[in-house]
Image 1: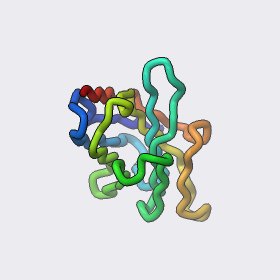
Image 2: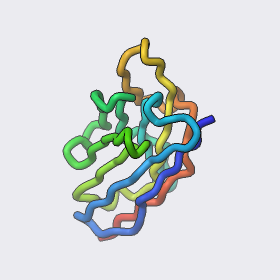
Image 3: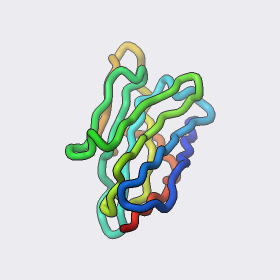
Image 4: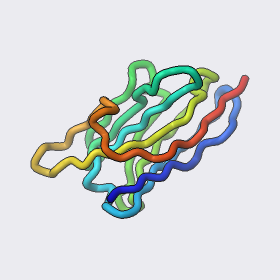
Length: 129
């Protein structure tokens, strides 16, 4: 069983930075490819970024790369989403998600929400002007 827990959300102003964390209990994070998604009020959930199980490959939603950086620290069993120069349109609940990826299948990244089996409860990010 995999449980994912997000933390690091909060209320900030335009231009500020936040770092979200996704930690896991149960199965080690190292067997998971991890994605970040967000859902703003009244909108569909959207892909933000993903990182492969090794950390060697990453993928970003168009327009977010450059402001957002996804990374992982295996020793800490955590994946991070560094968000810089935040804008009001970044306001949303941010979720991390995990997909078990066997080592023989390669160091893949996944952007489709339906492919992820495990989800955290989300952390609120509010950006005000």
